[in-house]
Picture (tube, one colour):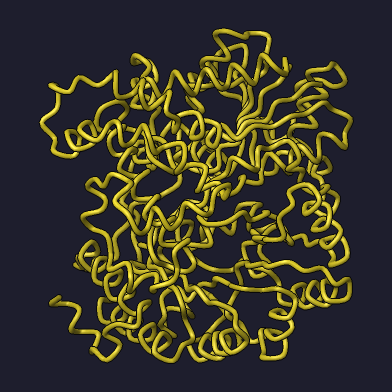
Length: 601
C-alpha cells in the first residue's frame, strides 16, 4: 500500500519529531511504499520567504489596526522583505558568517519582542556571536509571528497551532466552529503544501501523527481538505495527543475528518488496518482502533494482545526522506536545557519503550506508553545509531525515553566506546543511586552531554507520597556525580500537588537554591501539577487527600481532572515566584537571598 505520513504543524523546528520516522521504518519493512512529510517545517520555510511575506503585508489594511506593534512592522516592511531569506538561511546553518552582521549592526528591524530582551552580554558573554545572533534572529522571527497572529490568524504560533484552544477540549464544537470559518492565508498555504505532497505521491492512505494539542487544529483543517477533495484516500490519526486525550471518544462527527483513529503504538494498529483495507482480514481484526459504525455511532475494537509488536522488533526510525537542511535552530531564552530542545539537529531515538519504574503518582502509569516497558539491547541501539548517522549526517542524539535505565546506559556507553562511535547525546533519567560517580564518568566518556530528571516536589514527605523512589539526599548525590563529570543537569519541578503546602513549596525552592549554589543543577523548570485520569492520583484521589470536582465526561477529549485539596493557595502567584527565582539562580544571581524574600519581589 502507498502510505503518506504527516506530522501536523507545528512541533519543534530544529529537528524532526520521530513518530513518522519510526512508522516509516516499520511499514517499509512490511513491504509498503511509504513517504513522510513534516508539514510544520514545510509551512515555516514557505511562509518565511520574501514572496509570502509580501502577500501577508499586502493582505493587511494599514488603516485597520491601531496597534503600535502592527504599525511598527508595516513601517519596516521593506527591511523585513530584504532580510527574511538571509535570516532563515542563517538559522538553517547555511550562512554562519551572517552572525556578526546580525549582532553588531542595526540591520534587522526590532519590534516589541526586543523591548524585553535580557542583558545580552550577561546571557551570552562577549564572544558568543553565533548564539547571540540566533537569539536576535529568533526575536525577529517572533515579531513576525506576533504580527501574523494579530492581523491574519490568531491561532498561529511558532511551535504550536491553536494550542490554547485545544488544551482542554471536552467537546468538539469550538474546534468545528473555527474549522468551518473562512480559511486564512496561513490555512490556505498549509493546504496547498499538503496537496502538493498528495499529488506528487498519490497515496492510498494518509496518516497524521498528532503528538501535542498544538497539532490538532491543523490536522482538522488538512483532514477535512483530503476528505473533500480526495475521497478515495483513507485518513487515519494517532499520536501522543490521541493516546492521552481521546480514549473516551464518543462524538461521531470526528469521523467526518478521519476514517480511523488509533491508540497507543501505531505499528500494530496500522498493520491490522492495512490488512483490513486490502481484504486480508475483516474489520473485527482491527487493533486499538476507533471508527464510525453503520449506525453512525463510534465503535472501538480493542483487538487481541497477540497483535502487539514488541518494541525490540521495531526497526530503526527512517529519516532519509525528510528535508533535514530546512530545519532551523532557535534560541528563545538563555536556558541551557531549553537551548538543547530548540537549537541544533538532534536525531531522536528511543532506547526503551515505557518506564522501568512506572510508579509515580502523577504519571500516566495506566497507559502503555508508560506501563509497557521493553528495552533494546546496546548492540542494536548502536546499529541504529550508525544507520541514522548515515541518513542524517548528524552525530547529535536525543534519547527520548521516559526514563533511560541506568543499566542500559552503562551497556550502551561501553558499546559506544568499544566501537569508537563518536556522538553527543542527552536523555531523561531518574536521580537514583545507580548513577554513581563511575557510571556518570563512563557516560561522559561515551558522549553524554546532558540529562534531565524529575526532582518534582523537592520534599521528602511528598516524594514518598508520590512514590518517586528517590530522596532529596539521593538527588544531591546523583546530580553531584553527573555535574562533576561535565554532564549538564536539568531538573523538572512541580507545585500544586494535593496537600503540598506553600511552605513545602518554598522549602523545595530552597533545595533548588542550594543545588544551584553548589553547581549541581544548571537548569530547572517548574510545572504546575495537573491531575489526569490515567495517573494513580487521578484514579484514586482519596489516597492523596484530594476530592474530584465532578464535571460531565466530554464526548471528545478527556484527560485533566479538576480537584480540590481544600487549601487556599494562589498557585498563579506562587508559580510566578518559583519561575522568577529559578531564572535568577540559573544565572548565578541572588543565591544569597533567603527564599522568603521572593514573596515580596
